[in-house]
Image 1 (cartoon, rainbow, N blue to C red):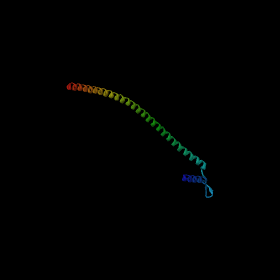
Image 2: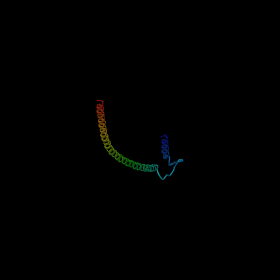
Image 3: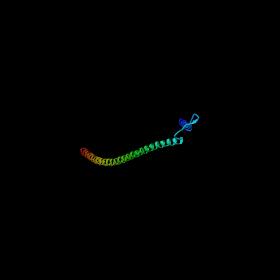
Image 4: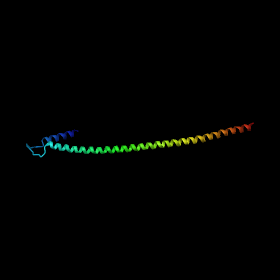
Length: 124
């Protein structure tokens, strides 16, 4: 920061004494005001280039964000469809296991009743 201020001070000082040379005035084709305007114009052109680059970059970033949002939306829809499919499959498995479980339980209960009756008749 200090270096910038020193450089600015030197450039202002040299521009003040630019036309004076060893007690005489040097003939210049441009005044310091015209030189400052040219420097300002160059600086403005540089800023315009930077602004246009930033504008293109922000446009590219916007397009990339939109693309990612669309991709995430599609992924979310696919996940919802998969969740629905998986839920239906789990429900079918539950139904199959419940049906087999009740059949097994019925067979087990019938076996115990038959065994009990057989033991009852044999001991009598």
